[in-house]
Image (cartoon, rainbow, N blue to C red; front, side, top):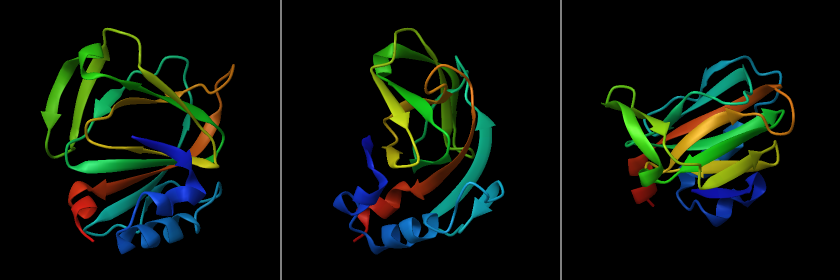
Length: 155
């Protein structure tokens, strides 16, 4: 997992494809319609709008893709769990690149996402997004970049 200011992305990503990704992210804002943008073999950028929740239901991980979470408007919290803190409820689905879980222990990390920072979640990072950031639910506009894991091995 990486959690940092979005303008520090170059500290972590050396592959030129990430310059393309982060340049594309600069073209998106709170008025961008929901949908998939800039889809290619290496990545896709998905814009979504949703209400944060007191207790979101989805706890997930991936095996083939790395998620880069960036909030365009609003705030949310994302919780991360250790492998011993969850049990599998839905086995890995290769087509959706997703495995679902139920928590049996509290999360080990609680991230606060705002439009100024990013969370990069790798396949080993079991995560639960969509949490209320402060005291009440809010509508957020968010981007999740799905980067194929093989990109991280390329230079």
